[in-house]
Figure 1 (tube, rainbow, N blue to C red):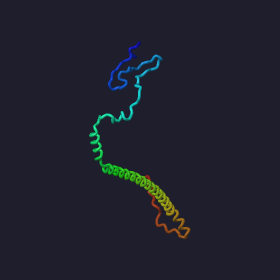
Figure 2 (cartoon, helix red, strand yellow; figure 1 turned 90 degrees about the vertical axis):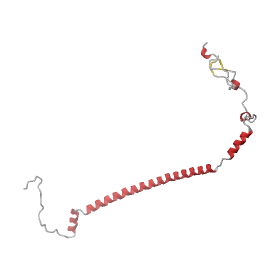
Figure 3 (cartoon, rainbow, N blue to C red; figure 1 turned 60 degrees about the vertical axis):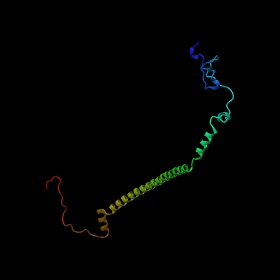
Figure 4 (cartoon, rainbow, N blue to C red; figure 1 turned 45 degrees about the vertical axis):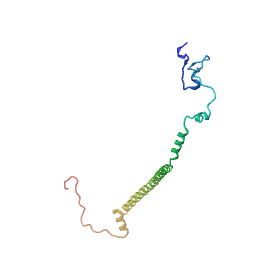
Length: 163
């Protein structure tokens, strides 16, 4: 057969139940890929995991650590949280006020455009009313008569020659 799928033996002190077991990858007799063997047996209990049964950590060390934890003051943490809450509140308020101000500015721009259009309309109407042709017709309807012409119009030729 192929040396590639030859079973290997590994010794390890960290593998527990798998320390002396055969472990390899390969193809089994039925053609299925086989992986490393997994240990079977009972799982550890909470007491095994908590190290309470063994004296790995002395009680004096645990008591010293709990005293250090007892010295922790919550006032600085509370003040820090309060500061962050105030900053967050001020930021949200700032965003809200900026949006409100933007909508107000947009309304004022619309009003400004409307007033410019109204002014242009009124200027056009004033120009139409005060044009000389309209004033002469209105004066004739009121019975006014044209005055004397004191002189004829002076024409300036475009070519520079006097006719």
